[in-house]
Image (cartoon, rainbow over all chains, first blue to last red; front, side, top):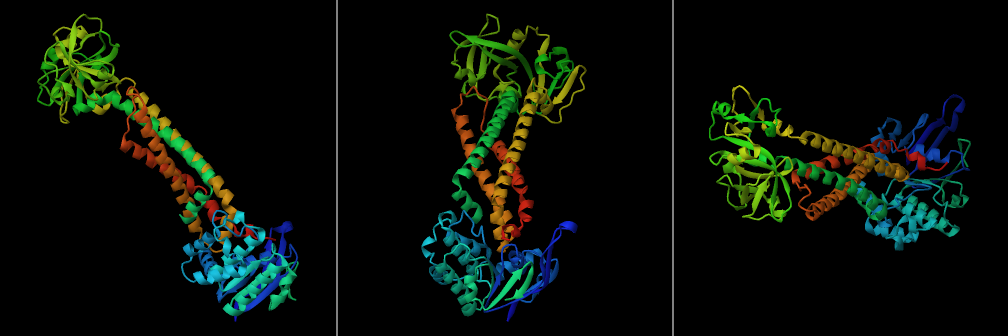
Length: 223
Length: 353
């Protein structure tokens, strides 16, 4: 079942002679239970695609439909609520609040979204699976790049979203950890019926994807 | 509040410095306010103790009790009741053997009138004859004792201290209460003059007697030499300090908020409502300002207790509460300035290309 649809989306920045078209007539569908991989080099428009798909940016043309809700019709507040309740972001950088311990990163989610988050047992399993259960009292500054990335993944998964949008989730990880994260995203899609969209240039994730798209110069094609 | 407290706990040095800055600003404002209050009190303590409403002076005295003289002939035209009292004022220098000279305000009062009855005795008794005086407690602090013989100005006449009274100051000088007869002697006037003025505690009091003018106590106090200028100066200083406090707090919070924007952008991307971030910023400002104010107030109290009695500072809780409210309000206004930046934070700014 399709939970995320990107329909004829074009995104243009600037005006007149400075106008740059980052995405051109992009169409994309993500279904529950699937991992969709969007592969492209830096500057190809991957992150712009992800921010539009997640309702952070609005397209110049076209629309995004999340679980039947056209984002163009929603107010900013409603889009915030939709992101909080249905979309989990795994970002490239600044993923964690620097003055919160790992444990408090999850406590913060509890404070703004009291229902639907992972149970304590599920969280413990998730942390064990990611190999970070011993880090719960550490601050982000005390973590390595790989550990930070894994905590950020756990943080995004904790709010138990229906759709997970990941921006280079394996950028700071070694091959072994890439496999763990890839498998985790795959399992989440299969076992928990999540729609996972990963934009990356890391081809190592290809083996965990159900569908792979390529993005180049703002145009998306099925790979 | 969760994010606010967690951040303060984690960034102890940074927030410690901000609290330290608020402590210094609030301490300065508190000390100045209490000093202003203490000085204002010392200008009017004696008047306040009479609980009077109006004062009648010679119309040519420019609203000054010390410049006013009312003749017996004029005074007789004013119908006095139990609510009115004559008063004679004279600036004097008191000296006693072995004691430091003290500048004071001599107030001559009539035993049968209300001021005499209102004045409270802390030791001894009230003066009953022309050679007896009752003095403010500050004389005691300067070594004067009951029974001491005091000379006033350059006269040879000796006056015996028969009583002490508390909080009796006028124009920041201690008050010496005595008889109207003594006042005449010290003012070098004959018995043709009744007093410097007439004090009444009746709001409805009126007199149309020629040569006299009636002032409300508020107006009379404002006309005390230096009183208005001093209060206006302090009010301006405190006002400017509050504005400075607001600007400093606002600048600090603005810089802090700007530094936190990448974090806020991530939180916004994750769907954390802008309201939560605004509440965090404002509550953090409140915690910092309240913390600073509490320490500032404690330091002020310690200062008031440690300073010698001669420094006219007094710890007034309502005044302190008012100033606290003012700084708190300026702190909140300062914290609200970066709110627009928070509301406009762009989550895209933290997304890669």
